[in-house]
Length: 350
Image (cartoon, rainbow, N blue to C red):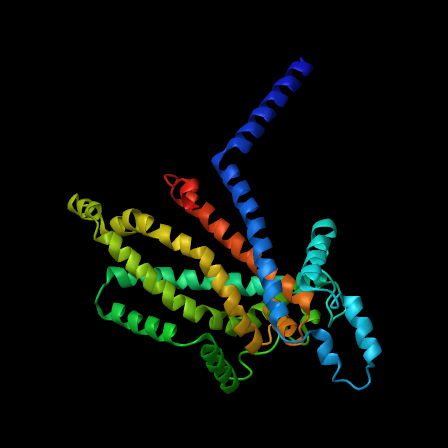
């Protein structure tokens, strides 16, 4: 009896595994991951070439220090591999990643690049994801209200706000928020991720402290994104509300709320989900400005410092990490689109 039960369980597990491996979603994810590897390879090679085209390298800045002898500079060039051609440097860097998972050592920090990224990426993701949540939680409802009240007073007010938000560059928005924080000090902190006494707080107090420091950077990231998303939502919903099936639903006497939120919104949401992957990438690039102005200890500030000091391997790893986040964001957006509308074939999303 036991052997029969075990055999049935193994057969059931085998059938489940076969169904999983042959499912459309699994095949699609596998294909996208393989494409992602090729994309990352080409993007990293192109980034490495562009970095090498910049004049000078890390040791050039050391030559300005009279305390460092020319012999020591040559020794450092050999130590960091800067005496080789860019093809050799790229090949060795890529080989270390594939065989050891080693992204190299930072010239400036004299630490593993992977450990530096591990410290900074969570802060950037926290800021970007929070900003994304805030943007969508506000922009989508306001876009719906603007479409429902088309050309009325509230819609016109939102149009003015959205045009103004899109017209302001991100760095101007950050500067205005800094001025606002200065005039309302000490209401909003403008530096770092935590307060001086952060470690002395309770776990709940530490969470509140981080959220308090996130207010202005999140606003700086959200304002421009909110303006565009609100207008996009309004336009998509207006297009759907003009469709014949919406007029038919109204003619049948369905409540207006059901027509808008059940029939119209379900069909207008697909382009918004597609936009989600690009929105995440846009927030990551916008985080450079927010982190710089508000001294946020994230990946963006680390990348800027790497560019300024020509810290080759740290810069390459930061750019690669940004590309990985973009690929993951687009993949998640496609899977969410499939979940929202099962009629969509994943193959058609390629």
